[in-house]
Image 1 (cartoon, rainbow, N blue to C red):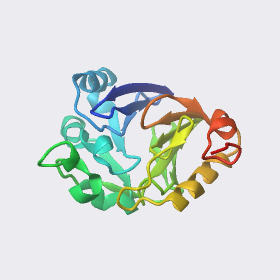
Image 2: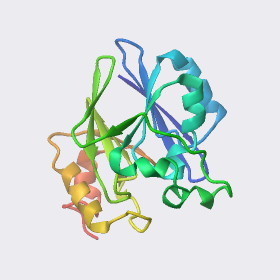
Image 3: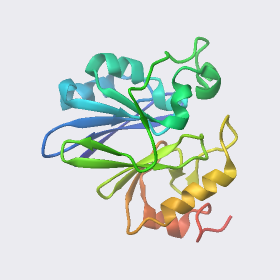
Image 4: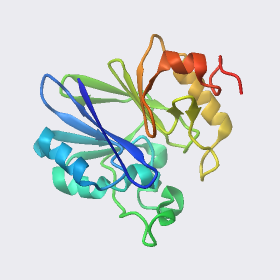
Length: 211
């Protein structure tokens, strides 16, 4: 599989294009902004090959580009069931922090639940519910990669003081990730890529770290 990262937006946010080598089918993970570089990357992948828009959670910086991408590709939008309201409620997605009108509302095509599998060509993408940053935050596991959104970041984790956030749930979710067998390449929603083994040893919010 191939992973392409495009970073943009005011914070900025990492958006990923996940492509199945065997079929050329792709998914866009967390298109939180509209940017010519993202459009170019989608067109390079073949807009007809973009079959899924996968959202790790519903905050504005992960969904602001969803509506335009949906119009461009027709791809199905996936979000965890507990974050479904974020797609149209600006008090939850916090989009009025960056624009007076808020995010363009949209309706997700698929409400995900823990343990669900999204098929992308020969790839099987597993959904792991990881609440804490939002009540419906999730991670996507495929092969040796985990797309962690704002749950796990390099030596850090997402904030828990926004609506539906929970520090105890975040700690439980990080423990859930920590206990995964083996190592994974971690593609977070912000800043730098890392590995799960590195985070087990160095992240102060995981078991072996020190706050």
